[in-house]
Image 1 (cartoon, helix red, strand yellow):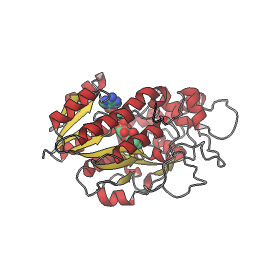
Image 2 (cartoon, helix red, strand yellow):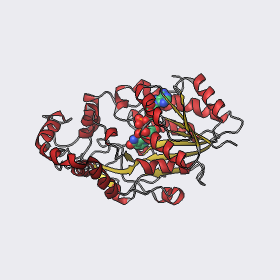
Image 3 (cartoon, protein in one colour):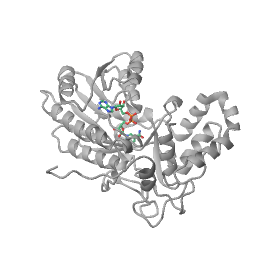
Image 4 (tube, protein in one colour):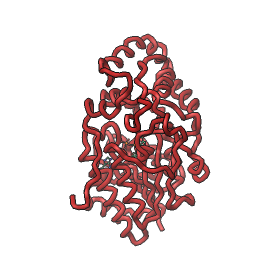
Length: 358
Ligand SMILES: NC(=O)c1ccc[n+]([C@@H]2O[C@H](COP(=O)([O-])OP(=O)(O)OC[C@H]3O[C@@H](n4cnc5c(N)ncnc54)[C@H](O)[C@@H]3O)[C@@H](O)[C@H]2O)c1
């Protein structure tokens, strides 16, 4: 059997590091991604052993050719539309996150040597998490409770993968972070989205290099038919308030983020779809955790370098602008209303499971 690994979404945040990791292991890697100007530019500097097949995964004929021609021993399926972009394009998101996953799985199942299928999912599948009511970290056995288009389409995709006859592995990622400053989400949508999240909502971050390590390891480790929670070690357990404060402090701009609104302790739903995660089994099986939170912040500080000093002078201006552009500027109430804020600023986040007849 070939040792080709097919990585869908191979130019994305997780994909580009996963390709690097696989190439460093000496494996042949085929990237399947859209032929966008940014991806074409990135394709000029691929690591040795990696090649590109421009593919729109929503086109079944292209996917058939891709899989037949490359005959991979494993597929790492990362391509997806993620939050917050997803709230503006829910129909495209359904085609990519759900329908394209179904197509890829069906074609993989029909291969003479069906590949192992490593599927990227998210802690979002567990739904909104009120830390006052669910104090324990998530485990893979907790029930799924999708509410928005992102968590809903990720659940639907998992169901397709788990009901296939492939050797599947589901990896549910926490909040993936990178030290690559050029990859920081600085769009207006990303900032409004960030400001909408409850400041005391829990999130467990993870360095993208560790996620890449987990993805590569899952193609060969003894983890078939397992669901594994992929997040950093316990130093990565934050609230959104502490996470954003830590990030701007590492860039020499402490206090640049205005404090957000806390979540409503009495609500089960007005919370975002992230939480702390029990990574014990995933770490035991994949040995992927290499970068602590303080490692990441020290690297970020070093990368930003001397720019920290002039940046500090900008703190009052940045703070004032972020406050006015924030999701709750002049809004009544004291608690965060993440779904209402997303609806008002980005698009209707609702997820409706399609009926059998639809
Ligand atoms: N980033 C996170 O914090 C996070 C957290 C949990 C789970 N995840 C999951 O991890 C996976 C990777 O996320 P990411 O952060 O790298 O996302 P990303 O947006 O950086 O990358 C997604 C990639 O998919 C590609 N893609 C989109 N539509 C496509 C299509 N029709 N055909 C081919 N390629 C297409 C994009 O061009 C992009 O390169 C996703 O499945 C996501 O749901 C990410």
